[in-house]
Image (cartoon, rainbow, N blue to C red):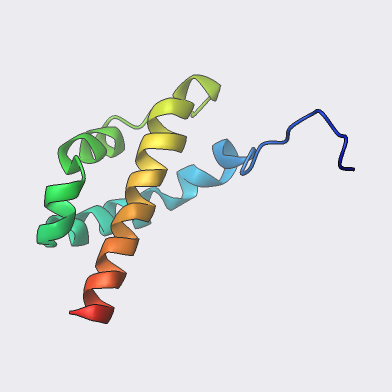
Length: 88
């Protein structure tokens, strides 16, 4: 186990389940639009554009924009909102 040289992928099936979250992502972006810190820290316009330009079917070629940029942006936004609600 410790001498294994191959690497796995986390959330390798993101292409299958991420599209089902599109409505939730849109809702979260609307909440982030009302959060000053999120507006300063995240490129919300770009995240909104990704949701609006969502392809008919996601594929591996969409990983940089959707799996990395959009998903990480949403998770970062959730954290920002949670932190502000918890510690403000």
